[in-house]
Image (cartoon, rainbow, N blue to C red):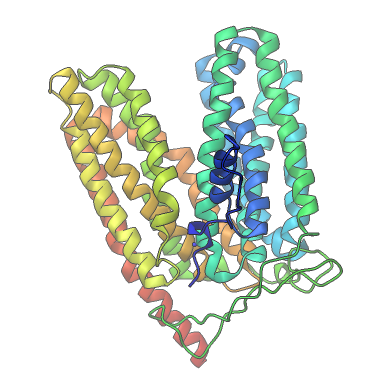
Length: 468
C-alpha cells in the first residue's frame, strides 16, 4: 500500500497572510494525494460512496414501507442476492483480464445504475428478488474488477498505500451519504425515499463516465521491478511493473492493449492452493465487520446495561480510527512476510477485542459503555492492520497480468463473509453469550496465526514452479 505517497503532502503554496480562507485552502491541498491517478480515483470513490451511504441509510425503510416487503421477504431476498454476489466475483475478474478492467468496469457500473433505478419500478416480490440478485452480482463483480484496475494503473510498490487512501475516502463518503440519508429518514415520505434511490443510480452513471475517462490520464511513473521469493524478499525473478500510460499507447486497462489476453486460460487463482488459503483466512478475519455491524449492536442492546446510544458511538469510534490510521497501517506491508505479520497481529487483537466487548455484560451502564467502546477501539486497530495485510497479499501473490482472476477469487471470499457473517456472529454472541465471544475470538486468532504458514507455503510453491 518504498515510497509512501499516501502519507506525503501536496506542495504548499504561498498565500497572502491577510486571506482568511487561504490557510484552509492550503490545509485542504495538503490532504490531497500527490499522485494524480490516485486523486482521480479518490474523486470517483467519493462520488460512489456518497451515493452508497445515502441509499444504504434508507434501503430498509424503502423496501419495507415503499415496496411493501415483510422483514422475512427482505431477508430472503438479500440472502439470495448475497449468494449471487459471491458467484459473480470470479467470472467478473476473469473478464477483466480478458477484455480490460476499465471496459468491464464501465459496463458493470452502468448496469448497476440501471438496476438501482429499477427498484423504483418494482411492484412484486419475485421482481424484487430478481433485481436484487442482478444488482448484487454486478456490484460484487465491479468490486473485484475495480481492485484489478488499481493493480493496472498504480505501480506495484504503491498499490496498498493507494488503496488505504481510497478506503479513507470511502469512509468519508459513507459518512456524508449517511448524513444525507438521515435527512431523508426524518422527512419519511415515499417521494423522498424514491429520490434517494434514484440519486444513488445517478451517482453510478457519474462513476461509469469517470472510469471511462480514466484511461486518458497519464499513468503513474514506472516502478522499479520488484521480485518475489518464498520469503517475500527480493530475488532475481522480477515482477512486471506498471509503466506510464499516455493516450495512444498500449495499456493493460485498455482493451486494445496487450494485457488483456490472459482470461483465455484456465483460472490460475482457482488452482493456486496457497492463494486460496490466504483468501479463506482473510475471509475469516473479515468476520470483524459483522461483529461491528451486527454483534456489537445486539450485544449492547440485549445483553448489557450500556445506553443505546453506545451503538452509534461504536460506529463513530470505528470510522474515525479507520480514517486516522488506515494509511499509516500500510507502512512496511509491501513485503509479504510483513503483510502476514500484520494479519497475525490483527487476528490476535481481534481476539482480545472480543473478550473486552464480552466483559461489558453485567457492568453498570456507563462503565459497560466505556468497556464496549474500548473493545471497539481495539477492533478498529485490528481492522486497519488486517485490511492492509490482506490487500498486500492479494496483490503480491497474484501474477502480473492476472490480477482480475486473483481479485475475483479474493473478492468472492469477502462476499461470502458479507453474506454469512451476520448469521454466524449473531448466533455466536446471542446464542452462546460469553462462550460465543470466546470461541469467536479464538477463531479470529487462529486465522491470524495461520497466515504466516500460508504465505510460506506460497513461497515454496513459487520456488517449485521456477525450478520446474
